[in-house]
Length: 208
Image (cartoon, rainbow, N blue to C red; front, side):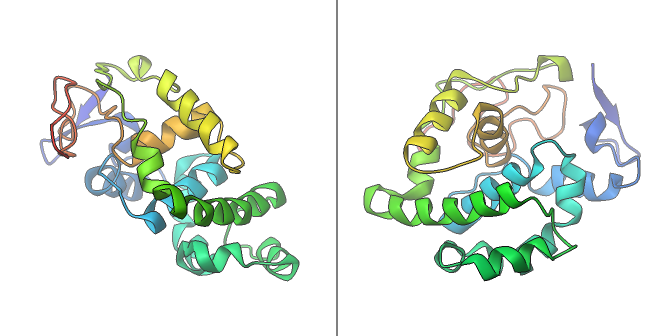
């Protein structure tokens, strides 16, 4: 089993056990935020953007820079980000507080515009949550945790059709995990079933 029991008596996966250079940051994120439902447009746009920036990097790197990202991207307000021009791209590329990857910066601006376009058809929250599966995984070890699913492949395909970039099946799955669309907490973790969306046995909570 890939959970460790901390000094507080709570079981967590190894990546969130509080050890290492960014252990406290990751543990706090795991205990309070990861896997909890996000249903507002700005919140989902932020998570989608950060997951795209994380591609190829560690999540600790992104989490450590999160406040810098928020400052650089106007709090991930999609209306403001969608209006960015080349001067903003150059401003962001000169900002050492974020991940300076031009393709990801430009994709974030493009995705803000795509988010605005979705407002006439239910919005980003409705689209993302429409791919909630009938059941969620039941991983006992870290090796059991999937990195993609049929739903994440379908979500990535639909997002791309709607004009989004940097949203492959793996990124889409990580987004679904982060915002509660699926629950991939290990079965023995103290956070299993804590979202109010899924029961510990993998069945959905109705009317959420």
